[in-house]
Length: 269
Image (tube, rainbow, N blue to C red; front, side, top):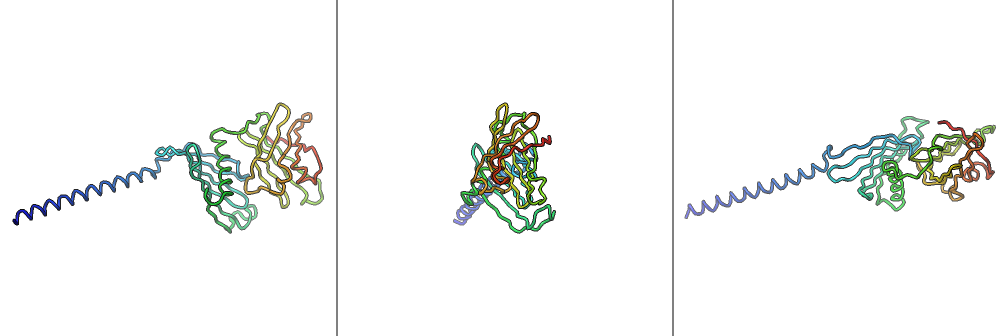
């Protein structure tokens, strides 16, 4: 009888031991699976570049592929005069994740190169409909570059153009500096002056003689709703003899007291 009890006890101990080993192996397998997904070598960097799409100060943009999930990843650090934002987008045919980590400075960096942070916010696609729309626009701006789904622009217009409004004024507050940058990937409009900072991406239609410009989206959070309610027509660039000229309803109405004018452009490069 004693031998029988001992045999039963031994069998129970063996079964318990086998069960524990199986459980440990299962846990180990789950752990390894999770580890594979976060392994650094599972992310393959495809391109690391500096762009000037969403900020005149530049943005460091990285495009990667997750070899396990086959998801694409775009990460960027966008610099501005009044703050910086770090974005991360994960997508596979459609956008899965969009996140933004923003720091707002207490003063512009041209006044203090090491300003204090006055506001820190984190947002994602579920924060609000407005945030979702903004993140989608920023994601689209990168997707157009990396996947070449960009608006067609003739190479003949590519370059950096600049001009000044009221440059002979005795009051420096009336002077506005305008710069248009046209590349194969984007068109940007930058306006600076007293209480003026507008940085926009424009869309275009071109032909052999002119290129037409329209507002596409605001950059650096500079979208001026009051100005854009009046018109989103940024006009046309064409040639007047050997000179490049811009005729722009947007600039006429908002920066030139409604006076129609041909703005002679300096082509910097």
